[in-house]
Image (cartoon, rainbow, N blue to C red; front, top):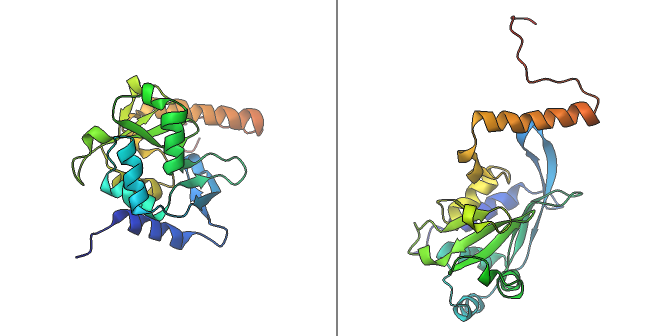
Length: 210
């Protein structure tokens, strides 16, 4: 019997939409519309994945292993000129952060990093990997683990929604209020007015037709 593999389905759907340069035109906030580039490494062997996590005494959830089997690392939604985007780590990058960069002594026991976007980090808490429906992902600004966001998802649900949301940090939306949204929007307006010579305001006219 074949297991319904959401990781594989999400990646297959994404690849169908990429052009010959592995790029995709995406839309973000405030009408932002720019190309994004995608880079995928070759997959790792199942035994190598198991040996890697066993050597670190960490659990690897089934769905994240499915990703590593297909791509031992990837970069998603990267701007072709400015970089950025979500980097998903392969085994070597996990080891580099966890051991070489000494994350093991900076993060809670059982956590390990699996991705980054401009220095903000995605972690798996292997203590919470108790089956397919487990919620084990955490997001931190840089390494500020004391204020980590509990994403309340596993990897396959997170990856599917990341792709659907064009790389946006959808897990942060639940903390957003109308006030904070418009504060961020005002910053975008200030940049337009300052650097592009626009004359834009958030104020809504009090009279119809104004």
